[in-house]
Image: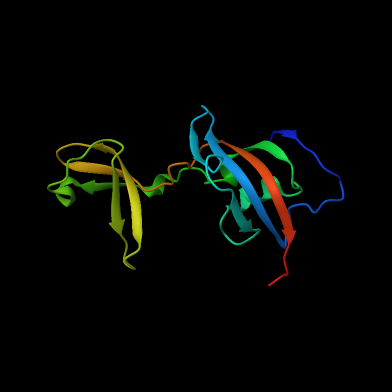
Amino acid sequence: MTEQSSTQGSSDELRIGQNTQVTLHFALRLENGDTVDSTFEKAPATFKVGDGNLLPGFEMAIFGFKAGDRKTVEILPENAFGQPNPQNVQIMPRSQFVGMELSEGLLVIFNDAANTELPGVVKAFDDEQVTIDFNHPLAGKTLSFEVEIFEVKAILAS
């Protein structure tokens, strides 16, 4: 993990860790600089460490930061969305897509046995079959995570 930073404030301020609530701006970018998600143009986000709003790898990357910090950290795939799993790429009969205008990159929503939505991306197709990738779109990607910390508050352990 690499880090670039600018910090201000005293060293005895509360730092991000377990049992803290954090208010921050963030931008998530691909290695080519494309922004995947950002709060910098809207209201800052607030979350409790460990509440599931951020992946653990993103939380761990900002542990120790304090209000006033503005840093950019590199998040490796293993700490973000993982590596693509070849078993998540499925080949299906074209007959399951009757009436659909297919194109590479098309997002198709399926429902599993529990009726949970399962998004997949068309990777390839021909007259006989369609290849669908169910991996997370950011799987295998190294991400740049820029954060500006506004507030860190202690919360009671639940």
